[in-house]
View 1: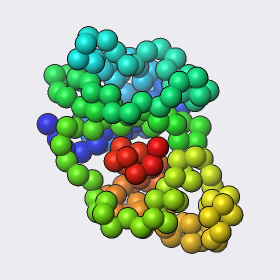
View 2: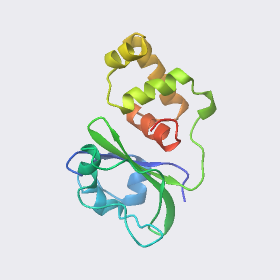
View 3: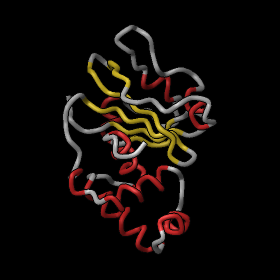
View 4: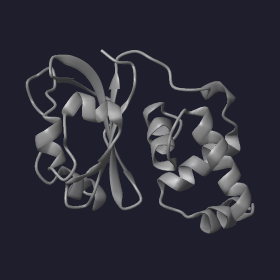
Length: 167
């Protein structure tokens, strides 16, 4: 089993918009398909956290984001996280072991900026909330992204959620 995170961006319609290379390796070609039918996760009790319409319910705040649901996918154990980031749901499949990036070196401000990003705030609005300039917000976001070995801000947010740094 790889130690990399498999991450999916899922739209309101429940269809996968993009996937990391690890997600494509684990789940196959999945862009444009319904997330619940691709992930097909199974809990130890035999139930499944993935159901038709689950992304819409999460985005409409009718359900709470999940917190580390233990699942099996293709015979391997993962922790499944589904969390709203702006107008999308970020689905993270985390293998049972492995540490991402330089977590201990993230500053409180970098974590605050990631939290603002997770809530869908742009750099200007986040800067107003935090009392810093939009350029400084972008700097903190970029530093956090690098420390978490993320390619995009969305991936950095997913890593931070996965690691329990933000909710």
